[in-house]
Length: 246
Image (tube, rainbow, N blue to C red; front, side):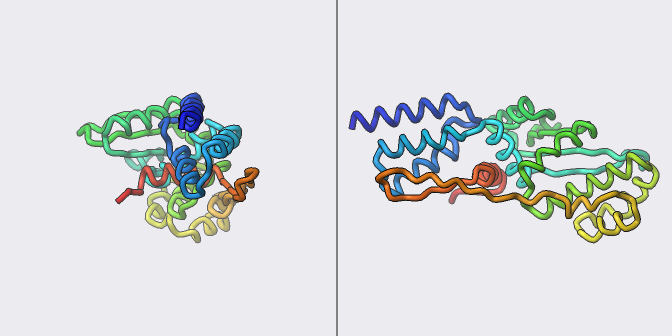
């Protein structure tokens, strides 16, 4: 019993040193549940969790978790100001709680953007408004791809409007007013490319994830384990936005 307690304290100490947004995070709880399901000894569990933590990357965790959260509660917006200028915006909107405020503030500090409250104080928002900053930021979706069709099409519409707007702001405004309700039609971007409004189809060129599995067998435990970190962290973020435990 004392040996089990010793190993448990060592694991929690290592988890705390990683300093993720939540110390007792989904990743660690998955490890605990894995131990229970497979009847692992505490010694083997400690070896296993330590092996996993060697590959743990805080930057990967933050960005892939953010993308999952963004897919659930975020939006990629193209708006207009008095029919004169196009405005580009990334937004995550959550219920105003201390935990949500802290989480979005962590993202602002680490990834950029701003966190603020709505005027009625009911919702907390993460917002990025500067179009140049946004165009640099959305490179995050190259390494941590969007998985839902709706978000992919929102991204394609933003990329299309931005490219057209750079070259011909008047044409961009006309197309925006005509096509803003058609942005979820993949054929729209084929039409833009065929008419040479854009150089490439931004929807078909969005990167699809390449699933890579990690094979980490442990001696004397007769088990095989695989982990795909982007999916694990993405799923944790998506559950944070859209999931529930009942």
